[in-house]
Every structure is written in structure tokens, then in C-alpha cells.
Image (cartoon, rainbow, N blue to C red):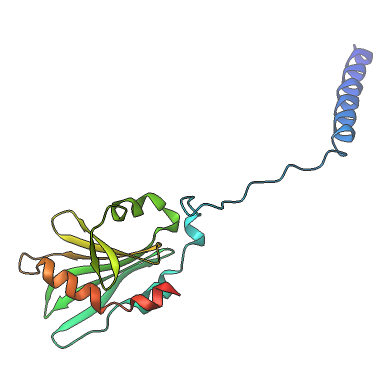
Length: 162
């Protein structure tokens, strides 16, 4: 029985040795690189949220910008007028989610020279440099579509296009 077990172990070891030697001469296969802008990148490779903060408008008069969320590929702030949250402002790097650009393909409206689209009944967004989605979403009824557009124009959009 011991001889049979030893013979089996030697046979398996020989097989693995033969297999590892025979495959060493093969060149590794190249890994295709994402060349298409429609190919998603890993979220951790998206623009840092802290870099996106530079594009946000500054507090202005009665309005205060308060940052609420920041992560790779996304940054969000609240627009406050006194104690009232009027809107949320956000910038997202669509490179991690290319399908989020689809709504801009048929956009006929432009804001500050960039394609714009409605996002539901309470949101307005635009696409900068075919990569960054900048969005303003109303939190109160009195913050209109015209208000959202005015705040979109206050973003430093050139900072995103670099």
C-alpha cells in the first residue's frame, strides 16, 4: 500500500513539473487596454473628490455652500439660504459610469456652452469635457429651473475641462 501511494504522489508531482516547464516558453498574452471613452474605469481611478471641489461656486450673499460628501469621482454640497436647504450641487466623473452620459446625446439645450439635460422634475445637469456631470437639484418648490441654470453657470466649469 505504501508503494502504491508513493507511486501516485510521484506521478502527480511529475505531471505538475512537466506542465510548468512546458508552459514557460509561451509568451504571456497581452491584455487589451481600454481605448474607448465608453469603457468604464475603476471607481478608484476617477478624479478625486477633493479636486472636484474646486469647480463648485463660492458662498455668495445669502447663499452658503456646505460640502456634504466627497469620494473618488464625486463631490456634493448643499446650497443653503439661512437655515433652509435650497438645493444640492454635485459634480461626478462619468468615466467610472459612461452610461450616465447617455442623456446628453440628444440634448438640444446648452448652458454655459455645455449640453444640458433635465434629471427628473427637480434636477438640471450639464456635461463638461464629455466627462464631468455637473448637477443642481431643487430641494424646495421655490427653487426653479431658472435658479438651477443660474447656479450651474456659477460653477468653475473651466476647472473641469483641464
